[in-house]
Image: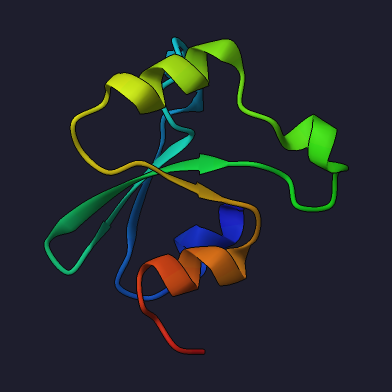
Length: 82
């Protein structure tokens, strides 16, 4: 998902090391922030499940948080056409 950094107009900050279920990246785009949990779409569904910490974070977070499996889903989230 490092391809996100190559998309013009985005700010991308990696937050995967914060732990405690916090999403993997924060994207800034057109004045808005997007919390994005990255799950590898090439892995089987059982390997893409949220961890217990991620489930708890998603349940308690009062803002938006998104799960993306590939760059196309990130583009769709941001309403960016290829």
